[in-house]
Image (cartoon, rainbow, N blue to C red; front, side, top):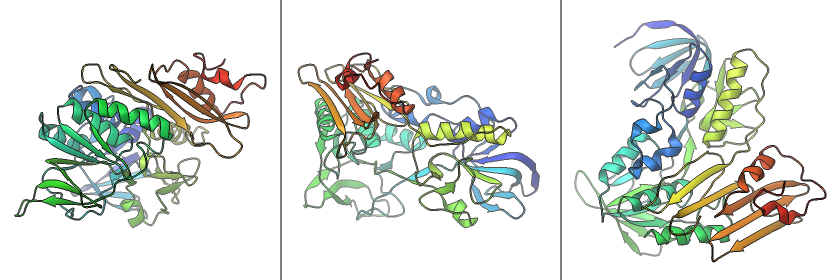
Length: 420
């Protein structure tokens, strides 16, 4: 075990996730310290690994020098030192917190600090591999949480042959991204894959076996109903990892507070990715993490750069088991209904406010649905199912915050060329 202090590195990054790896690829000589034993990987594609479509090496990010399996336990701001659990101490000129986020473990009866056998979070590659090793055809699996992560996990488990139940507390699936009609189409697609979907239901606890190593046997609902379960997946959201920052006395609210140069309350420490809070927002999106890393690379190189927030589109493709896989560009959300699969795109705020214009086209026969919200002379958001030919132009218009042509019919927004 090393106990000596290593020479000061110009830039030290705590965290080897997508943000940390992106920064290392753009800033020469960065020292990256990562807790996971794996090389950096694309977290967006974990559901494809779970489904068995990809092996872990397929989702690996470009090689970066990372001290793997090392956890930082303390930051000494006065002497600009980072203390690690292997006894090493690393000096820094600039420190970057890219510590990411932890899965939220809901306050359920039967769920303690040690998870019962059969209960799985779904956040890291190790989580994914453990879950994949537990799945077999016919196994009863309950996914708690109907957001993007829960939907992806449920689909992947169904592709593995599991009997899947998806339990969502809210009124409909993917409430952050979808309106009720789009969520209904998503629900029907999942049910077509054999997933049993329950919405507006609250999980009260887990029923586990007795003994030294309890194992989950059922998920208990608030109304007393029980869902038999051999596997339970916790997909209840994430929470920024801010413990190191708090212990070091940095300003922390929901996340580690940063300015437009991604600088914390300590001028020698920056934060990017899921742990960072910029202008009151914690994004929790891969697209935002990568954009923040790119801006910070410019700042660290001494070039003028400012982070002004992220307007990103995520595309998710849900395929039936007989067809090919999924792709994502994390930031908003995408899911085509039919036997071949489901393509959906969601961006911005698709929930209209008073005074907004809403343009909607629906074709139940073809399983196509499009809606966009126009606020003033700009796109506020939208949801598209089925033919996504218009999504590229719409997304660029929204991301660039461009004004819509004054003489354009709003109905043309939903034509194949996005109205341009």
